[in-house]
Length: 411
Image (tube, rainbow, N blue to C red; front, top):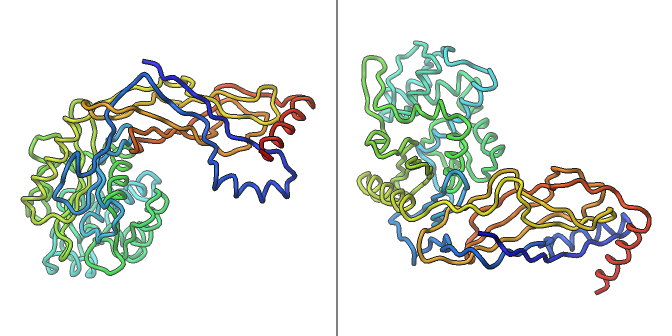
C-alpha cells in the first residue's frame, strides 16, 4: 500500500558568508528543514507503550526490536543506576574489540595476579571462576568466565593483561562507551563492583547489547553455555533464562543494594530479535518472571510492516543553485517498522535535513533522515541519501534561487 506524499518545502537562504554564519544558528533552532509529511493509506497501531498499554514491575525498563530499533517499552530508561555485574557486557565487548584489532588472541594467556585473586577470586566471596593465584589463563577461558559465570577475577585478569592495570582498563571501557554513543555509562573498575562513579542506564545497556550481538555474533553465542568448569569446579550459567530453551540467549544479571535486581537480555524467535534491560526488581524470581513476561509480550503483540523498498523515493529536498531545484531521497535498505498488530493508528513521517544544500549534489550523498511516528511515538529514524546527481545550474538558475530565497527570507 502506497503513502500519499505531501512536500513541505522549507526555505533556503542565499546570503554572504558572514551573514550565513549568523543565520545558520537561527535556521537550525527554528525550522529544522521539515520537508515531508506522510499521510493516508496505511493505518497501524501506535507503538505507544505507556501505562495504558503495558505495565511492568521493573522501576526502569527499555525494550527494542533489534532489526529496526523500534522502541516497544520505555520506563525511566535514562535514569542512571549502578551497573553491578551488567558492566561485564562492556568488558566482553571491549575484549572483543581488542581481539578484532589483533591486540590479543584467544590463545594468549594472562597471569593471575594477587590483586585479581584477592579482589575477584576465591577470597573475595563474589562471583568467581576460582582462578588459581600465579597461574596463567587463556583469553578464551577468561571470556567464558566473564560471559557465563560473571566472574570478577576473569574481568580483572583480562583488564590487567590487555591494558596493564584494572584502572587503565576501566578507563578504556569508559572511552569505548563514548565511542559507541553511550554518554552515561562510566566504569572505575573492571567488575562493576560498588564504586560511587560506576553508572549506566537501561537504554544504554540495551544499545550496548544490540551492538555486541550484531557486531560479534560468534562470540555472543558464549552466553548460551549451560555451564563452565575451571580449576575442577563446574558452575552453572548465572543467567538461568539462557538455558531454559525459550530463545533467550544472553546477556547478564546484576544486583545492587538499594537498587534491587537487574538484567540485560535478548531473545530470538520466529525471525524476531528483541533486546531488553530491566532494573529495580525485588528478587531473582521476580526478575526471571518479569523478563519472560516482557519479552513474550513484545514477541506476540508486534509484527513487521514494510513501508519503503530499498532505494525507493520517499520524498525530496531542496537544492540551491542547481539545474533542478529538488532532488529525491531514499533509504539504502528496506524501511520497516515493528508495530502492534491490533488497534491501528496512522503512521506519519518527517524528513529533516541541513540546508542549504548547494549544487552540485552527488548521487548517494547522505543529506538527512526520515523520522517515523505512530501517533506521538517515535518509532525509528533512518538515514536518507540522494537518488540522483544534480549539476550546478547556470547564472540564471542561481539568480532565480537567490531571488526566491530572499523573498522567502523577508516573508
